[in-house]
Length: 245
Image (tube, rainbow, N blue to C red; front, side):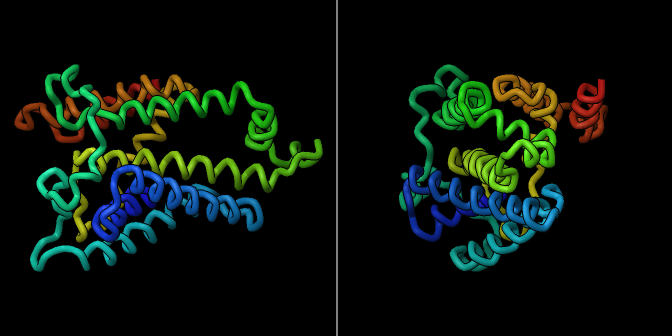
């Protein structure tokens, strides 16, 4: 949530290009992750609760900031592609759109997502710090007993998670796939879908690549069904059944 907000602010507030927006999104996501980590490590505040509360802070802060840059009577941020002022903020497609029937939203965002998935896999499988991070996640008290800096590991873990989430959220807007509604009063559901994709992928970064595509494929398919025969929530129902089974 924070990363998406930061990326949008970078586009409309500072007229940054897509590289700057990505860095701003990463920094905002990491900041919110670190805040949640500090609350968890030093105040024993549940990270799910603090994360949800921080989502609302980011949501309404974004609405207040972006509403100042919109023309009177407009509630949505304009499409990046339709404005020469913001066109540099769109992620390049690198010709990948030709592989997907000319879909203009396909491009560098897919590569960035896959690269980060492999980066996390390397971090958790091939580096020295993987033991401490995993041990702290399994049992912070046991990690502390073994002489590990469990509080630092918690902050680092949630900071890295926030950074990646920030970049992931920003890709949704920097591909010009959707626009932000400054009257929005609910947190977008993409982050919650990410939780389902992570578990369906076996909590493995590489598995999450395929499970994310699978979940989104079902979601998009459900949005194109004949609503006179099926309810609008049929795709969420199918995804939930698959995850439970």
